Length: 393
Image (tube, rainbow, N blue to C red; front, side):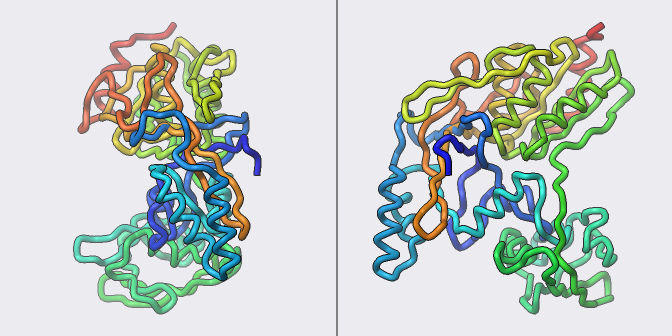
């Protein structure tokens, strides 16, 4: 695994969840797999840790690898030993992933996953309901609909389980549940109770969606920076009618590939600095490509779920005076993690540095403050701002 493969992904939950924070949010359902953080592609990604202001790593890959190797030699779990080493290091964003979990992350970052196409939500009484069904998925073909109750998964009751665990059961283990394997669901719609056996399929994620808010406003929603998402943002900007404004909706975007965030920035900037970052004290920079649309009115929407690579993009557009940022303060995640392979094939990610916006602002623990605070009627506020920015022609 290359030392240049840096990640931009929220902190992993404890192993009991067997998923990550993003894994739960982005997949938030049975369909999925994924967490956002894979190789930068251009040799640099970033992430910033709020727990400490130092730019040196809190622990070392060597220490974690040694702990894993010693555990293997003693016949103990290398993953658990590595996790203990990461915990002792004080690295707020450090994490250890099994081989299967890491493969799921990489798969999701490629913009695809193996699943059945269900998004789930947990009700106040502990019941699990279908929140959304992906069109054309196995769940859709079986006639499952939003609002249906998910009673069981492979004979296990779904009631009371965290959504992350429901996702894990629906998704199955990365190595034991490939495309074509089945999962049996117990469902209920009103008084009708029935069972469905679904066959897992290879599905694509919709990380970038585009819609017209009005005749003069195009909304580009980026749910995560998966592979190819930056180019899709650029294509959406090019297709938007001349003389119209853009709303770049980054709410709930928990990060992803920083290279894709830089590509997205290039759609709105004509070159120049996007962010600086350090890796073990070595200072580096990320720059936009030349030729972006610098005149079209632009509003970026953010909230507390805007994290990591999405904050990097927001900071660049705000510092460069390219966008008016509307919403609520972002999460505050700006540390650089580098992955390394452990002896048993699992992967450890440890913090090696931090990034800053073009003006030198640190993000971690502070987040980005919008130019215009708004937690309700955000799209309406964005439309008002765009009307005030005027016609770019």
